Image 1 (cartoon, rainbow, N blue to C red):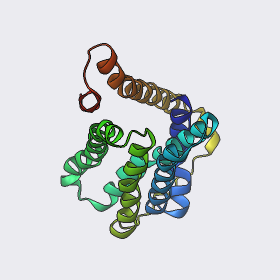
Image 2: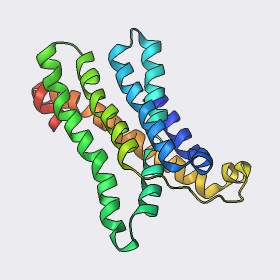
Image 3: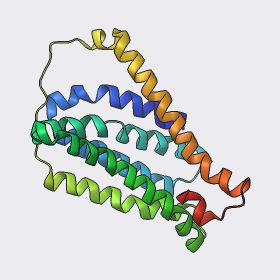
Image 4: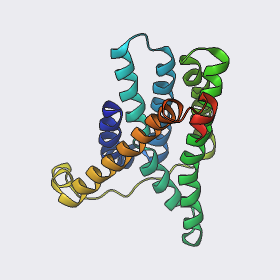
Length: 196
């Protein structure tokens, strides 16, 4: 989890620089592809070091998602509809998370393999990459005359990134620990514990 979130925060923080140069959509598509490959890698990993690598890969790919999605939304959606559009951006991850957790237990129970949920759930991730490529219009972020050193030394940005890291780390720990807690401590079955 630490590997995942360290690279998640690093790429989240740094994704604006390549987005200014290459375009928001390109970075969204590329980072989503990296995340999908990382998710697929969980199902294919053969040992613990390779699991660490794919966890980092998935985190590095997932990190830029919100920055790119919100930026593209701001360029594409009229100001009066941005609240609704923001809800859709946030809702996408939430629905994906609910679906993934609800499906993981039954997929494991049906196949007997811990790898199967990752392999099967990687398919919608690759589909999302294709949909981003086909349906999202490119937008260029505004270039700003701020040095990387100034950004890295900005205490407000550092505190925001640290707070984001802590919140997301805690959230994912609860999400990964919660189903086990329901199974072991409360006797809830595998298929229901992920849904809870």
